[in-house]
Length: 329
Image 1 (cartoon, one colour):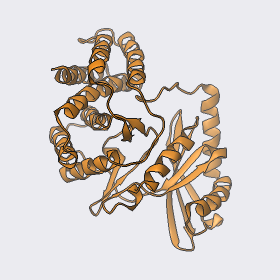
Image 2 (cartoon, rainbow, N blue to C red; image 1 turned 120 degrees about the horizontal axis):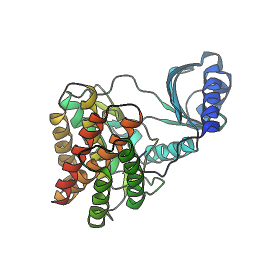
Image 3 (cartoon, rainbow, N blue to C red; image 1 turned 90 degrees about the vertical axis):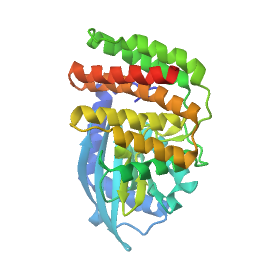
Image 4 (tube, rainbow, N blue to C red; image 1 turned 45 degrees about the vertical axis):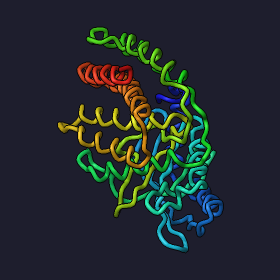
């Protein structure tokens, strides 16, 4: 989690999350709450007996289940995400702010209807879209994703929290110390690169904050019949929009570590389409390089923590060094 201050869940929180997950899949508590949320969302009532929840993801700090049900208007497809902390309420508030500001009514971009929060289960419930994420070779998908990102950044919604660059750099330095301890033989020092990022931040920081997704990648988009669905508001906030673009590029580099493909064209296409949609200038693109470098460093730490070989972390550290050098040129 690169933007917000965050501490991993302790054993008690992990156990609480697992209990919430089991109760959600049990269905009864979920079905009763969905009837209330349907009224709040302004959609036809849900038949409680029709509610079916299926597990999708279970991690230490969150889980995702798919929910299918029926209403008087027909089938209902939802996604429910559960957390150990207060993120359900924050994610819903930001999603709702974006929806109310017009992204839900956009002809080409759709963020899906936010349904609400089920406090007892720590869940945020939103509309679920059919389809797949664009592939690494889908250049038209990259163009559509970039245009949707530009629409998000131009939205008048006010999101919370408003993140300061110092928080990002504090998170970075802490993680780079952990990475250096785990992988002491890296050719480039992650701690020194984090220090370089702080020095550059004094020059590049202070930009106007805008609504950002915060965790943007190919998997933030579902594209069906030319309509772009922008999803996942877990880390949404207000920050420099160049962060989202740099994050997308860094995640594409991370993808190459798991798959024998090049994402060079994907990354170039995304940036070109974003610039076309926003008239972003050279100063903005310099900040994109800066944030790409920061995110590559974060991901070098993250993948190592989950068991990736040191060589993979080294690739991302090298990519970070090149990106920060471009930003500082």
